[in-house]
Length: 297
Image (cartoon, rainbow, N blue to C red; front, top):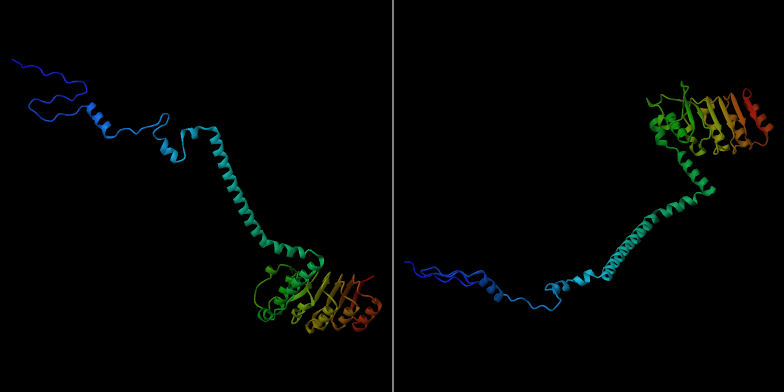
């Protein structure tokens, strides 16, 4: 016959110990009670959440987060900081731009000084003098005709070589070949900047038959005298045309009498010639076979 039954466990109590002994397993209620005794909850004041202190230390609270006035103030401060940062960037850029532009102000002022007519004339006169500087080493290296061709084209004149009909006008287009192959036969210095300083290039030119000097602002009496005294030109020059050269006077025209082989001479638009009849008589007396064409007022 079965023995008497054990009474049912009380609510919240753990299961009854098995028959024969052993440890009892605590129930859920006992576990909750044990945890409560081990870590009692921190006291809180009415209307305050447990985490409010930690967030107050970090500068945040629910009330502060939700206040419209505070949000507006924070937004205004952010905008102000952004504007201040933008202003600092603009100031730095303006300062950098000023420093950069300062490097160009002085050259610009220098160019403005050259805008005066006298300054421009001085500058171009200096540059043309550089173009007319004689390079004697170059003459020795490539010969008188090649060096003279480079000088003339550099100054804006044209040259034509013996045996060719084409006028050379491009400095970089000068023909290449054996030294001494190309001989200058004609020179057209219309509106060029050749001047007395570069006339040493004419020495050694033995095949020049024609020279045209038209509207040359640097041609003066000394230049014509230099042409007349060049021995190689005294023998080879046959035609000479001088027009619209305001610095040429009677003295320069009379100096041409040494060109004994000259066959044709054109004198046109030369306001510097004052004694036309006297000058013409001197030329005809020294060069009886000269064909003289005059267009003088």
